[in-house]
Image (cartoon, rainbow, N blue to C red; front, side, top):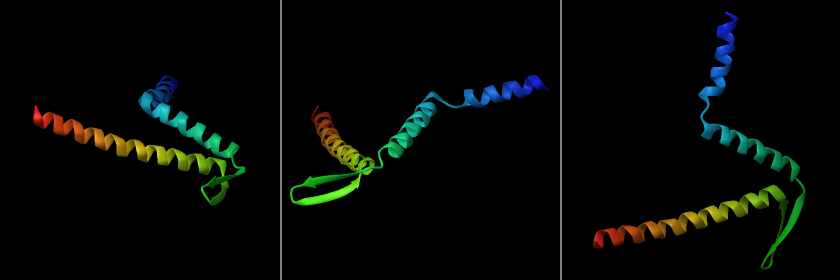
Length: 87
């Protein structure tokens, strides 16, 4: 019976895919990052001054970059589709 208990605990770890492990590790790193960067920072863009926590500011910059990446990839995909139709 002790043997089956030992194998079931090792099966729990073997059931989790490598991609899930990476996601878990990244989530832990993100939580640690947020907890360590709670200090407020001031940002000036043109004439607007905004004060917010550093982690929130970096998250917003990440989201802007992500949206820009999506929009530029959409343009590339449409261009590739047009080239495929022409051939």
